[in-house]
Image (cartoon, rainbow, N blue to C red; front, side):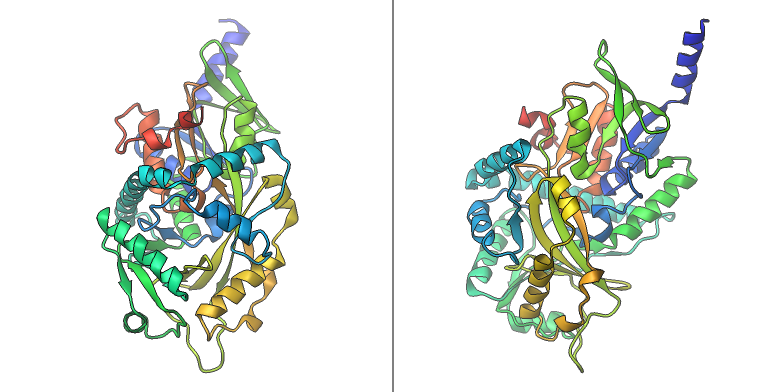
Length: 441
């Protein structure tokens, strides 16, 4: 053997079966199901595992969210809300060509036809993921809180309640057990919280978890099983084999990572890496914020205790009861990732969230909320509101798993299972057609 052949053989022997780029909910779940399928796996993250968008989100598992982000009326709402710096949805102005293309594609998808064509697929993938969460909760080595207490969509306007009632009818047609609740029925369901609302829709099949706790328990399990985790490791360059249309390795600042298969599950940072490979990945970042309390700040003598998660429907604010407290989160600020990262958290977004919460929750004391306690994360948004899951066209050993927007936590397990099935060349447990990267050309 020549020296070159010996080095190549040693490199091949050291190579993992799969390199998963991204240590959030999608990457961790992909690593889990790949490991269960007998693959050797390395997970690479440019920061700390689980500390990006997967860290502070609401933790919802949402069959109720069967309407894509690109829905009728979103453009009109976006234009209206752009005039209000405290609005729940905001588009940060930019002349970035990729962002402008994304906005145009998004606008074209905000039609009733798009919604009707895809709501069954979105519901099916959410229900399958819910099944997998239930199965994972039964695994002795995985210790995480899981609550299937449903989800409430609280409305404090007549128009909002009418809109929710229409969605409930759609949900019932699709087989969900949704219903509309009066203020009196809400009081019976949640007696320890004072609500200023006209009513709510209720989705009993929905569930919620503590997201970071889930990621850590899966990571710890995988680490004990020999899965390698590379934190604070950024991919600087890919090594490609053009003759075979494959990726053979990835360079970092200190070394080279070799694998037979690569999974790009890096959330809103995925397009930057995809661009190195000349792979079209139309994903833009949507910034969300949250604040968590051991005990929610309330006026003297009041209580704010609940077991059912709820969304303040018109304000787009999510409230999640967790074993160790309660979390308020929301807002969607679309824009170029680099400018959003450098801008920090907008005080207008914080004010908008807290003021909105107080309108529905009259006992919520906004004067006790510290703006410095807020956290922000970036959701990877596709222009049609559906996740991107499947093989990249240009490389036979590259699988894409991103674009989940606000459903990343909800769809973590099913995405991980689909990634494993794709790499193992198995029949996928769901029809991948609506989610394939090739739909963008």
